[in-house]
Image (cartoon, rainbow, N blue to C red; front, side, top):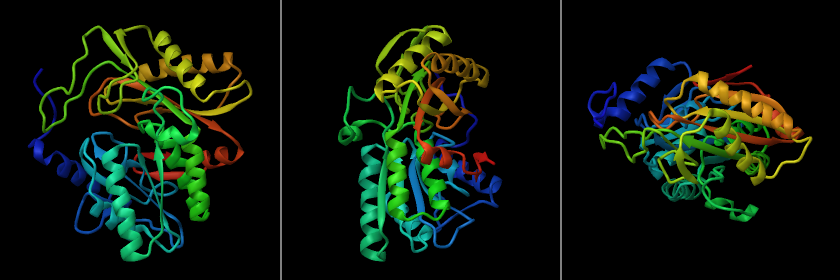
Length: 338
């Protein structure tokens, strides 16, 4: 299939996208170091723990869309599906530190880990800034059973939104770096995600699909860059797909009757909202049957893969502390909650 996109030069895809973002959100976002890939909030809060994320482009609103009030303070932006540099993350770290230290929250990918660990070392060595790190590693398709210390073999996918939300609220409430880090770890550990993909996606510089799925097929558990999932097979009904995914998510944590959750139903880039709400109603039925109470639903595009068709479901298991942080107001260019 030929590439069919509303773009100009594929090599300018990232720079022109960022140009548009800074135009549309000029009251909230700016950049440092003369580098548009070093995106930071304009509404900096003195004395607050700074929170930074980063990752490749092609996933909007992940990662940069959550920079703003009550969430993140900065984001280093890589090329499509590529990690940003250590230097970019270091520049952001210096900018968002206001004396209380900085927390990095990003997905569990080797390139990001390598670069952001280096940035943290630079910040500590050159600037005396203390940096802590919490990884998003919520994809139940990545490996089999796990214990808490083995969690890092899992990919980070859409559920990182819950980690941003809880840690961002904690930082905005002026909690210490140790506390914000503890909360981010708890939110990350309590989050599980599984996705289903119906189509591939096309990286602009490559110009053709990264992999192939037959017209009548789906793949359960595919990663957000097209990584292999749990199984591929003929497409099923929304209810069948949702039930298979929910069963895997629920038994992974596991859950008990009386538990409370926040639910994220996330479109991967080319899935109509109609279909996301059809999935949502089935999730609600399944959770009611299991005696699991839903505190809040989030439905829409939170972490995409260019024009991939498909959906992911994330559950965050709540306690009192996390519930309060989930409910805390936030205002970013791509996410608003009063």
